Image (cartoon, rainbow, N blue to C red):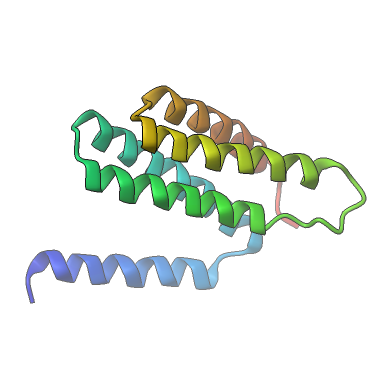
Amino acid sequence: MPSRQKLAQYKQIDIKTRVDSASPHRLIQMLFDGALEALAQGKGAMVREEIEAKGKALTKAATIISGLRDSLNKDVDSELPYNLDHLYEYMQRRTMDAHAQNDPQAIEEVVELLQNLKSGWDEISPE
């Protein structure tokens, strides 16, 4: 088995282990990290004009943002989940706009929004 394939398998096992043992709070942090990493990869691929890699990375970012939307607790008596849902929807749309229009500024906008949300999330101490 080629070493690149072994490394990919190891990464999959490592990710599964981290997910299986993570608290719900940590899982959300991992989603933020994954989305930010995919956006960075997408932007890099965009700059290098690697169309397939850009598409994969930005689609992955949009999918992760969808996971963040799905994680919202809408049973809470607050407008926060509703507002976050709309913000995540906007970020998904901007990510796909960035892909379709080769717009690195749209990626930067989504990164900034995600970083702001992540910094707030990181300040919350898990129960």
